[in-house]
Image: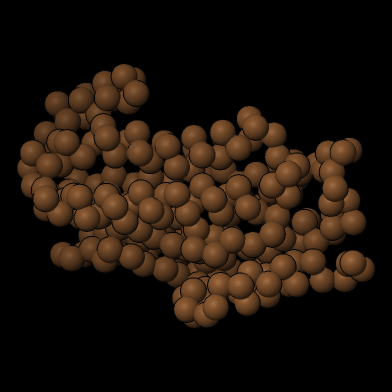
Length: 218
């Protein structure tokens, strides 16, 4: 935290202000929740959630003094509805959702804008890297779902995914607008998720369980 505060102070001293803070760090540890190590669980929250909190604490005070600024937190549709085999990513993004929405309210006191970006399917290295490094523990209770897990890891890169350049362009345009939105979602399957959040939760969770366990005899 001290190093970050020092960097922020250096930027403010040199540039006089920070206009926009974008929190985009993310890691996706794939696999059943019971297979993940405690170190992976801690790492997911440190990178996906706590890092954004740390940077907000360091940067927002300078924005508050000017009564101007924008914080952009990059989340995921997984923060709204989880699916099997990506639960830790979903949990850390759900925490980021709640943090960002609370921050939006509390920053109204300083006229600082907060925007939550909720992408759907976007072509990126995060899924490719996850597929390459995933290994199932020998003690896993989910060995018969191995094919389903690998399919889920690659799912965000399948048909309907948008290029990451398109995502970046849309986020930049929204960030530079006179009135940045509190919430924006785009990317493959984002519209479907907007609909699913209004449906009965048990039905939605059951739907994703069936979808990502297809072909496995129970």
